Image (cartoon, rainbow, N blue to C red; front, side, top):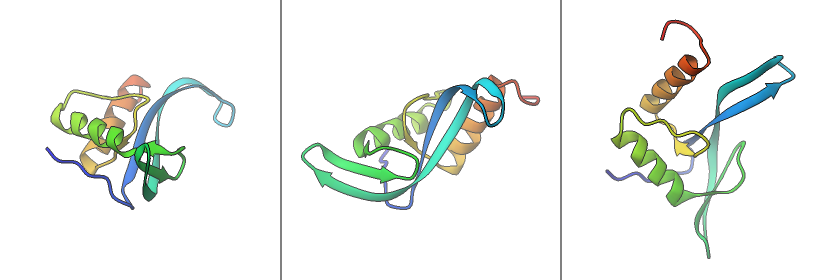
Length: 104
């Protein structure tokens, strides 16, 4: 399966938040998303700049996305991936279950 990142795609990243003073919550999973603003080529390969993220490696993001799409039961945490509608639904369902929200 071929996966290629493009400007305008959304990057997703699942992280564990230990404490959030704003919401007075602690120890929960959160999905962070950011739009790809640019893709550049340098000596380290293709590099991605996206909202809410430091510079990311395009090949790593594409590999992570491929694994997620090929393995329906896989969830990657602390690893960036291209957000699709299908993955957004799967990730949000997993986060809700891990955070003990609703009937999942």
